[in-house]
Length: 150
Image (cartoon, rainbow, N blue to C red):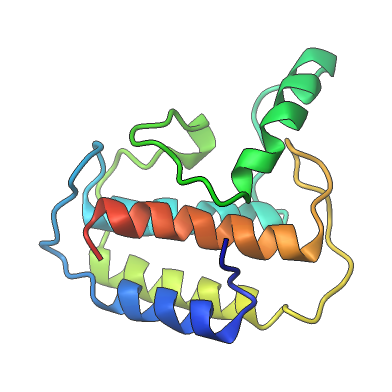
């Protein structure tokens, strides 16, 4: 899996985001392109500690999420219409142009943390190595950009 910490993958993702237009249609799912751009910002907000899960992460959920964790950054593509946590659901109108700008800024900020070695644990999945953070965020963006054909 590519990583947002790799310059080539970082530039590829930015080019694909820049190829989105306000009228770009999804090939699956319920979100429009603006909602997708807003949705793709949420993982960066989680990394920055601005969003925390609204549910309690007890022993059974920790066990379940620990088994799912490698799926977040491995080479296997995510299937279409995978359910998401309610913190990640964007089901309201947004300004596409502004959300595109915001997403590009967050991708930039994340990429420029490529030399950071210490990362806070993910509130659901726990600790990730730097390489796993880079792959997971590339994989999420790739999934949604494929959803919109870019």
